[in-house]
View 1: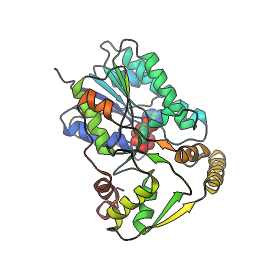
View 2 (view 1 turned 180 degrees about the vertical axis):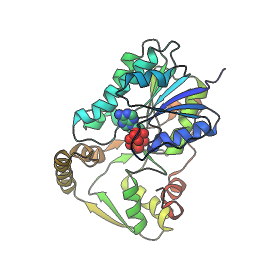
View 3 (view 1 turned 60 degrees about the vertical axis):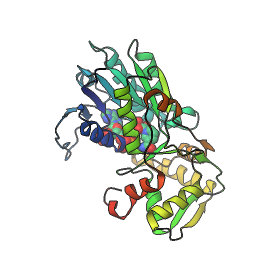
View 4 (view 1 turned 30 degrees about the horizontal axis):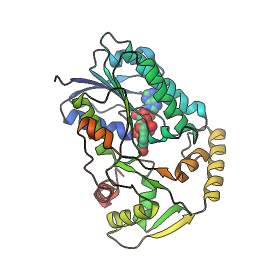
Length: 318
Ligand SMILES: NC(=O)c1ccc[n+]([C@@H]2O[C@H](COP(=O)([O-])OP(=O)(O)OC[C@H]3O[C@@H](n4cnc5c(N)ncnc54)[C@H](OP(=O)(O)O)[C@@H]3O)[C@@H](O)[C@H]2O)c1
C-alpha cells in the first residue's frame, strides 16, 4: 500500500480542522490547507503545511487546493446561521464546489466529507438540512472519485466554542439542562475524530459509504450522565446543581436571538432549529461499521476527555 503524501484540507482554521491539521502533520503527512485571509490573521507557518488563501466560493482557489493531492479532507462548514441560505451557501454549494474540483482534477484524489449526525434528520433544522444536502452534492459530483462521508455526533475538546459554555457552567457548579428531556446522545472527542480521519487515510477502505462515529460508550449519554461525569472531571466530584430550563423558554430565547441576528447581521447559534436539535430524543450512533472498515477505535473516554479539554489547566484553550 502506498500512503498518500499530500492531503488537501479545508476548515483547518476551525475547531475540528485545527486538531486534524495537528495530527496530520504530527503523523508525517504534507498538508495543503485552505484559509480565508482576514485582516489581523496570518496562519502560523509550520513544517509540512502549505497555506493557500481562498474561500469555498472560489473555484479557482479550490482547483489549486486539490491539484496533485492524494486525498481531500473537506472539513470546512458553518454551524451558525440565520437562514437556510446561510447554511446552504457553505455546507451545500461549498461542499459541491470542493467535490467538483477534486473530481475534475487530472488525478482525482480520494475524498472525505466531514458531515454530521444531524444529516440523519434533515427536516429538523437549517443546519441539519444543509449537512444532508452537502452529502448529496458530494455524491453527485464525485463521478468515479472514491469518497467517504463521516457523520460525527457532538464533538468536544480543546478549542471548541459550542459546548464550552455548558462545561464552564458545570465547572462553576450549576448545569443548565433542557427540562424534561429524555434524549440520549453520543459524543466524540476531537482527537478521536482526528485519528478516525488518519485511519481512513491509511486504511484506503470504506469508499462509497457513510459512517457514523462515537466514543464507544454503549448507549451513549443522557443529560444526567453528562452532568455527573463533567462534575467528576471538572469539579473533582463536588456537587453540581441541575437547573432545568423549560423548552418553551429556550424556544423564546431562540426566537429572540434569531430576530436580533437577522436585524444586526450576526450568525446565531441558538435558533429554533437548534432547539429542535437539542431536544431531539435520539442522537445515538455507533462506530461499529467504521471500526470494521478501517480498524479505528476511539481511545478517549468522556471523563478524561472533559478534564483535558475544559479542566483548570486548559482554561485558556477551553
Ligand atoms: N463541532 C461539532 O460538534 C461538529 C459535529 C459534527 C460535525 N461537525 C462539522 O465539522 C465541520 C467543522 O466544524 P467546526 O466545529 O470545526 O466549525 P468551526 O470551528 O466553525 O470551523 C469552521 C471552519 O470552516 C471554515 N469555513 C467556513 N466557511 C468557509 C468558507 N466559505 N470558505 C472557506 N472556509 C470556510 C472556517 O474558516 P474561518 O476560520 O475563516 O471562519 C473554519 O476553518 C463542519 O462541517 C461541521 O458541520 C462539527
